[in-house]
Amino acid sequence: MTNYLYFNTRDEFDRIDIAKIICFQSDGNYTNVVLTNKLKIVLSISLGKLESYLSDSLKEKAGCFVRVGKSCIINVNYILRINVLKQYVVLTDYDTSNYQVSISKDALKKLKEIMVASVLKSSRNKH
Image (tube, rainbow, N blue to C red):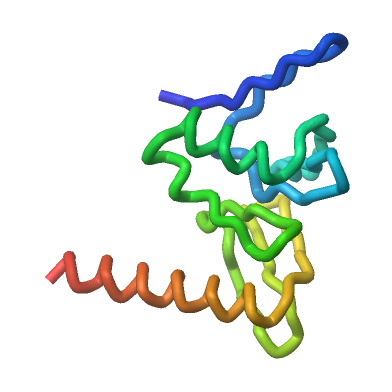
């Protein structure tokens, strides 16, 4: 079953497939949603409020979205590369979309630790 996020304002209604979301990027009181088809949707909600909305709406499925620093929430399913030294993460769907996001070293170190721990945990569970 596909899951969607719904955003309703006075003038617009958005229905966004969570599996197609690469990341959310803060832009003041607005948030840009970057999708796998390279479409960007601007939402009139702050990243902090969006983070709460994700956990309330998606429950356990919200685990694929990780806040990285002050300005970005990424879908960890699209991580291709984390480069701490050069301060960026590359997100891709391995087909049409490649997206690079600049993030602070500290935030990337934490993200890398989370990813490595997740990989180690899943490999232990398979044995």
